[in-house]
Image 1 (tube, one colour):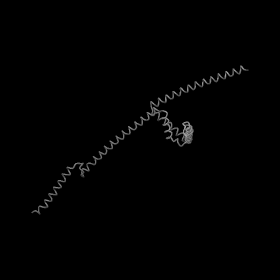
Image 2 (tube, one colour; image 1 turned 120 degrees about the vertical axis):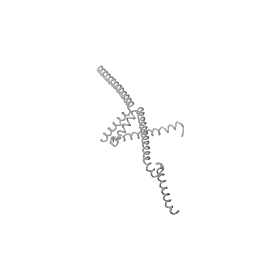
Image 3 (cartoon, helix red, strand yellow; image 1 turned 90 degrees about the vertical axis):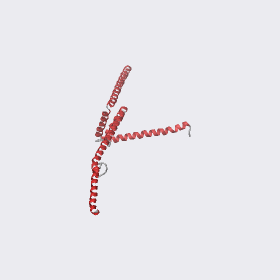
Length: 142
Length: 70
């Protein structure tokens, strides 16, 4: 009798398990990590990623806006305090962008300027060196 | 002879004095014009700094473009 009942019990048990399994699967929430949960959580995750990207983009936009404001403020202050230096810097920037640097005239002017600068530097150096011994002699040091 | 020489010297002195006065007036005018230009430039840069800077960049760009062909 017991042997006759075994298959039926097994089928009942297995059927019960299937039933329970179905119920459990039905009860699974999307965040449980189950197969169905994984399927349903993917759009949610994509949505969250989208929200994160939107937040990041907003943050980037506000940072960029702040940077542009600060640059504008800096340029305005510089233009108010040193108008000619600012204009000369802007014109030099335009000159470089216009490709005027490799021209012969620029090379000539640059060479002239560098030679003058070296000459002035040497004069100052020689003047300092000439002044130093007289200064030490006046102070009475050997 | 002496009178003509002294009158020539007087004329020359008067002419030189006139030229000096004229030069002085011109220098004063040039100085006033320069001061006006300076004040106008400063006022324009203060009122619209970005336009002034953009104009300077454009001017430098054109100059660089022209001189790069030399």
